[in-house]
Image 1 (cartoon, rainbow, N blue to C red):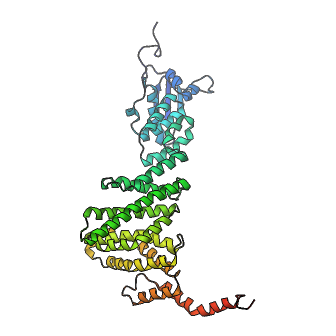
Image 2 (cartoon, rainbow, N blue to C red):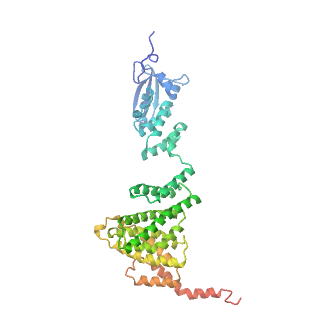
Image 3 (cartoon, rainbow, N blue to C red):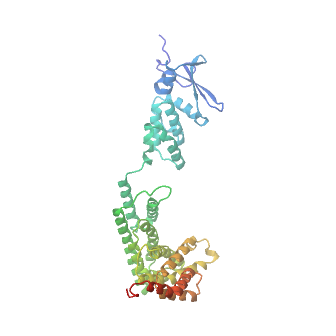
Amino acid sequence: MELSHNESSTPSRIGDRSTSDVVVRIRTQEGRDDWIYCHSDILVKKSKYFADRLSDNWPTCQILDSRNCVEVYCEECDFDHHITVLRLLYVTSDVSVTELSSVKNALRTLRVAVELGCPQIVATCVGYLEAVPWEESEEEEILKIIPGMGSQAEPILARLQPVNALAVVRIFLAAIRFATSSPPSSMNDLKTSAQEQLEYMLTEDDDAPLLTADDEIKLEARQCVNRLLARFVNLVDTLLGDLHNSVAEAGKIELFQSHLADLSWASQIVTKLETLSDFVYTWVETSVNIVKVAERVCPESSLTGTKLKVLEVTVKVLEAIGYGTVILPTTKRLHMIKVWLPFVRFVKSAVDSVGSDEENDLTLKPDGELWQSMESAFVSIILTLPSSEQAGILTEWLENKHIRYPDLTEAFEVWCYRSKVAKRRLALLDGNNPTTNGI
């Protein structure tokens, strides 16, 4: 007896018209129309869609070229992937990576395989997409397509699922310990990346912060930053000793600049975590020595850039004081004005005088927001001082050649108004005081 094609030891081949008993007609609204000569035993075995279409339960069956015909309409963009799925139905072994070739092809092949109910091809595509890296554009397409495919495609999304809160806390704590550990300069790129991601984790943008800091997180972050501050203070003291000996090692100066960069970042973190007090107290106590080091120890070639980095940290401290985030006594507030006001004037003047040859040095051209924030912080702090202290500061400002910056006009106006109406206002208060009325 002659063997039929499905009983023969020779595997059936897609497009083999001589053994085909069914035509799959793939069509689009744009007019594309391909006839694919196939074999019903393979289609029925490997595709639920074709098994249904070729079953006795399907109400009508078209005939084309003396064969059963199954018409499949699809979008133009999926046309080639329907051909691919039909071809893959004929693969006798596992589908290889080269046959899927890319994330884009695998994703669209998967979509067609799901529609046609081809579990083997679906499993292969899912395994491929779950294992390979994705470009950002591919990830966005995956997020659009995969969620609608049900549980069979869920493994693909495993890398995008939110992790539990404990895992987030662990990685945050590990990262902040490393980011504040002052590693060797050869690890600066790693440290900077950790710092950037820590700040991102705490930032509220289109999404909520990745974690909400509890007391444990705040305590650990505070301790990490305090250790960084302690190393910085010790280095400042060492550099001052070198200053007295007229020698400052280049390595120590480089470390000073590295610590400043770390502290500029750390000030952002402790601000977000609302644990700024220790940072402010330490900076206030060390301010005089920091200014001395910045003015006299650093080499001239890096002088202005280093001073600007000092100011990036200082402005955070001054804002915390000026806006009442951290409460300091009058003497400390006055101390900060007397230490930093002359230094800021000098640096601003140096930056403004930078010649055209250095215009491309971005480190010498800070964002105008730095100067505006510094000026606003000075005004806020000055207006919290006793009026007599305000008068002394404003007198010095009016007589200074750098009167343009910081512009203390607002503080001057408020001081004039308060001083002019002071007697009347206080007299009214005395008149309303029961003690002064003999009651």
